[in-house]
Image (cartoon, rainbow, N blue to C red; front, top):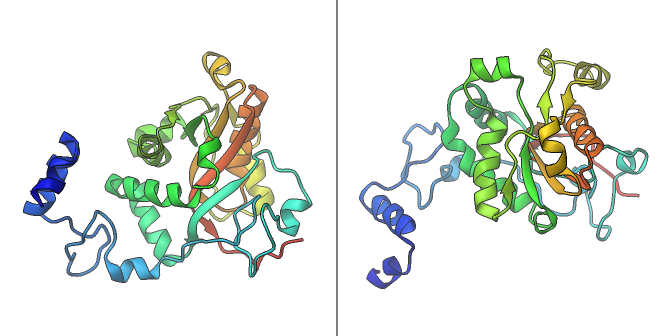
Length: 256
């Protein structure tokens, strides 16, 4: 045990010693908040999350019913060319994932951000080695002021540390405030964010030629990340991939 502790870096050693004295508690709201071996969910909460594993569409990340080989795309992705190149999602957006994500967004539960960063690192493991930098989807300054933090930035920062990639704080911004995307149709979501995103002049030289991983919390129709990706590519980004905590459940995606 002593030898194992001595092998840690100072920061890791401090964390390991603290965990021995005060074992980490589950991040979910289970009644007992049991101690867990590492910072995460209780076993009961963990079992309720529907994680997305291969096979899935290489374009939008939607799970397939069966394997069809590498880089297979669903009919929806094959029939259109989105502004982003590929998307990955850690889990399906259902009532269990939604509760955790809403706690991060609206209940000051920024302690969940590190957990979600690990989930995304696992989900995007196949595309992370190809990235140059990690970029959060921005909030409008007024919304940021009222919320006090950007939940996607809270995830993107620890993800950058975890992967060793550069973190680009605000290379894409919202130039006007929009209504919430919640409850809108696919067309309504696209109209709501049309022309909303832009790359500031100071960032254009930095994003030019870069391969960027755009981080959001939930992928629904893709309108928001499409808008961000379009702005980044107009500024010269070589490619823009997307990684999210969760994506909405769609009809079973069939590869073509």
